[in-house]
Amino acid sequence: MDKGYVHVEITASQSPKRAGSPCGDVVVHERTSSSTVFVVCDGIGSGVKAHIAAQMCTSRILGLLRQGFSMRRTFESLVQTMEQAKGTDLPYAVFTIARILNDGVATVLTYEMPPPVFVTSRYAQILPQRSLMVSNAVTGESNCHIAPGEGILIVTDGITQAGLGSGLPNGWTIDGAGQFINDCLNSGVKLKALPDCVIDQAKQVWKTVQGDDCTVALASCRKGKTVTIFTGPPANRIKDVPAVKKFLSAQGSKVVCGGTTSKIVADYLGAEVTVELNPQSLLCPASYNIPGIDLVTEGAVTLNQVYNILEEDEIFDEISGVTELQAMLRSADRVNIIVGQAVNPASKDISFRQKGILTRHAVLPLIASKLRELGKLVVTEYV
Image 1 (cartoon, rainbow, N blue to C red):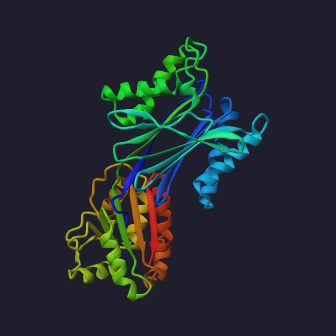
Image 2 (cartoon, rainbow, N blue to C red):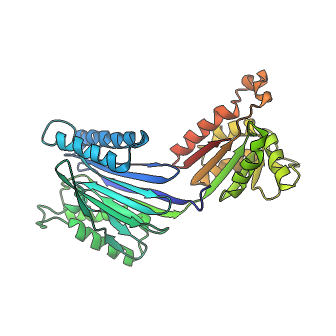
Image 3 (cartoon, rainbow, N blue to C red):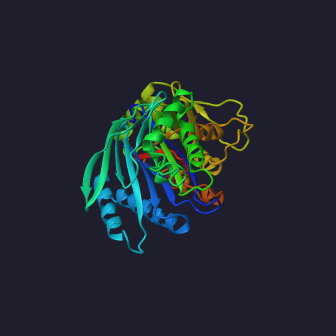
């Protein structure tokens, strides 16, 4: 299902031109089942006006991508819009869009922004750019492959222009920043610490007065942790075996939620479902056990209780199927959810509504939404 998920982690550090005012640079990212898109926008000027311009730019980029526009078409559309806004009172921002596919192939498109920097644990290299004419603007395209332990660093011109008027005629430049990054890596600085290190150095280069908003954003790859949940029997019994095969072929930890679903999986494996003896919790449903499956729980009630505590980052005193599933989801980078379409007659019982228990099909989208807010990639498939 995920063939060894590679997780793209975004780490950013920012410093506004004036302390206490909004930063005119905005960093956003969005994950899909096939890629991670990473956007850095720099609004013209600084403060509130620049921040709004950058925010509008990032919102437009993500909006077009969600509508199905290709990365290149989205980029060209935004460049055209900004070229029309240039020199007017309309919101104006420059930007970089980077897309990293699940196999590590990366494309970076820049409009009036410094070139990207490819980083590993040992060295940094400024990526060469191919010049492209878009709406009379010269833009840049870079391509590379990113493996686990490597990444792409994007900076705004508050970094490359550091020192202008303070002894550096051309500013710090991307070459100067690149050399500093290499020095950091040679001295043992970890990739995730690079954004803070570069920001701190840029402030020193600016000396007494910081002349612009400064942003350093890193998209780094690492092997991701996957959890796959199978919950609810398929609507058609013919689909039971294909659904179980898909579930068992997934990478990472495997969780079954629901009594009927547990029986379907156990029958396929030629195993028996056993019930947890002497459960610790008086509030959570008892868990089950199927040899070879990491966690087996009851269905709707467990999912509702997980939803209620999903955002809690504390370690719970008691161990139950609810707390175990919550911990697994919290630690995951990718969560696959295979949802059977069969209707559970028990969920129509009035006692479910009296207790505020949402059906499986109602609570799962809520869980998925919370997981995405926590930065997880969630892929839901209905069978």
